[in-house]
View 1 (cartoon, one colour):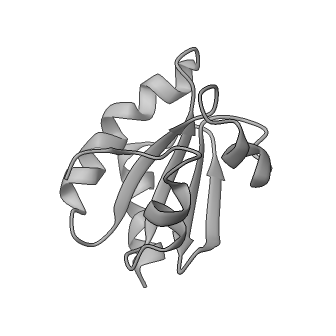
View 2 (cartoon, helix red, strand yellow; view 1 turned 90 degrees about the vertical axis):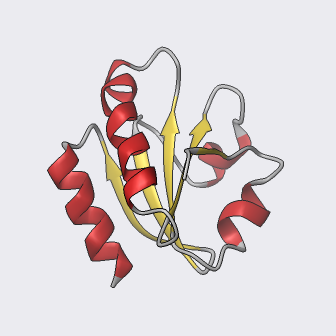
View 3 (cartoon, helix red, strand yellow; view 1 turned 120 degrees about the vertical axis):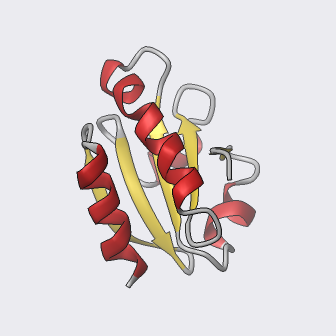
Length: 107
């Protein structure tokens, strides 16, 4: 599965109403650490297809969602289950760390 792009317009349907757990990457084009983890996020999207929805929110183009969830630093990764934030991480993660976090949140 490819990386999904969540927006202010589709966030409720794609994330909050999703039957699958959702990993949301809050990012911006000017963010160095965001660019560092982008390939890792894309790889995870393929690896966990059908188990977890993985997508990104560009905070510059979609300011409502990050403001609502109090995103102060990027990259911020949030896991949602049944419309609720169940976990959150700030900063770039290694591939091994990200996989571990995804596995923990699948339980």
